[in-house]
Structure formats: C-alpha cells, structure tokens
Length: 143
Image 1: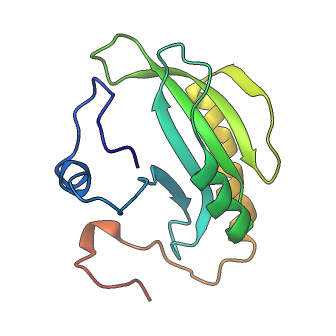
Image 2: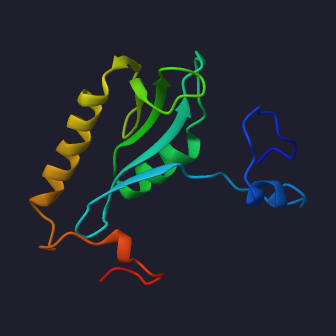
C-alpha cells in the first residue's frame, strides 16, 4: 500500500490509520459475488468509477480469483453525473482465469444477466435450500 494518499476520493479511517505504520501493507478487496443461500463466493470483483482511465491494478483480484478458481473482474462503472449514484453502464475486464480486453458499454441489465448466470450455475451444486438472511446476521458465521 502506498504511504501517501493520491486520490481526490475520501480515505476511510482504517486506511488512514494503517498508512501511519512502516512495514505494513494492505489492499482493499472491493466485491465478492456470493450465493444468496450458502454464501459461497462466485466471483471476485475490483470496482472503480469510470473517469476515462485506461487501467486499474488488479494483481490481488487475479491472485485471489485464481487461487479460488473463480472468475475475476475489473468493473469500471459509469454514473449519470459525477455526484450521481445511478449506474448507466459498465466497462468490464475479465482478469481470471485469463486476462481479456475490456468489454465496453455493457448495460446494467446485461451485467445483471451475467451475475444471475453465475448464481444459476452454482444453484445446480448448492446444498442449501433457503436463502441466507443477511439482514439477521449478527456476527456469526452462516451454517
């Protein structure tokens, strides 16, 4: 992890705290798509708001996805406006198991369709019958 903060985005308190100590390093993990029933990871995703940048580091995302034998992605999301939260499109690069070119201008509907496909494929082997209630999670591991 870089010792200095170079982004104009707010830095979270843990990141700010962690940067004070020489010899330590961490990289945040952005998203893990999971099964709603058993919480098994289905994909590892590095997220970034699309400001027209050509590259986003994905070394850790690829490393984890490769070790877990899951698809890994860098997902650049575009919103209506700079301060808007409504996502209007994605640019997606698959980084695991192989690295692809960036697929551009993917609609939210098409990305959801792909994520649902991951869930459908996993459902064929999932051993749980009911959806895990994330709202009731109180610090215990799901069984």
